[in-house]
Image (cartoon, rainbow, N blue to C red; front, top):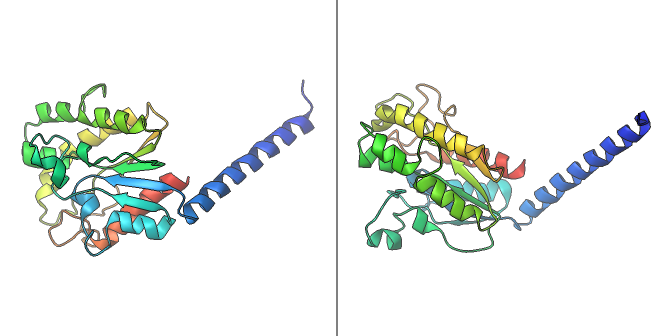
Length: 232
């Protein structure tokens, strides 16, 4: 049986190593050495022109270098040739680079605009199958992971129940995110960030007037949750 002092010594060494690693990660972020690519739809892109989007909040909160390729109206499945040049195809938003983290969202426009959040089984399976083995979302994540980057997939804000057109998409959103969560659990380099509990019933402060897109406050809160993953 090993002496207790040896066990304690090894535990202390491991603890010091963890503290040093976290310190180095934080220092790298503070010096802008962590490179982040963001992709996705209007949840990520809202307020880009006023520099209050999620990507801008990430720069301010973490001090990281962020390249934002997100675009309003973007979908996971968008076959028109012009979609790539306009950024409307989320997979085509990717640009090669030495990314440490790739943060993205998507799928909401496919369900809302593609099937009206009604009878969406076929569209859902196109996005991600029940077993997570096929679909445009796993296909894209696998491509991003092959670059060596950590991938953060961000869920959607929920409706505050105040006249939002996305209120009827709640069940579809829950199903989509449950499948992505299960997929992410199979790869330590894939992290799903849920926003399902962020919006309290009747709280309009995290949304714009349309009750769909995030307000500047909402963008900051989304960035905060992403930042917790990157730093921790």
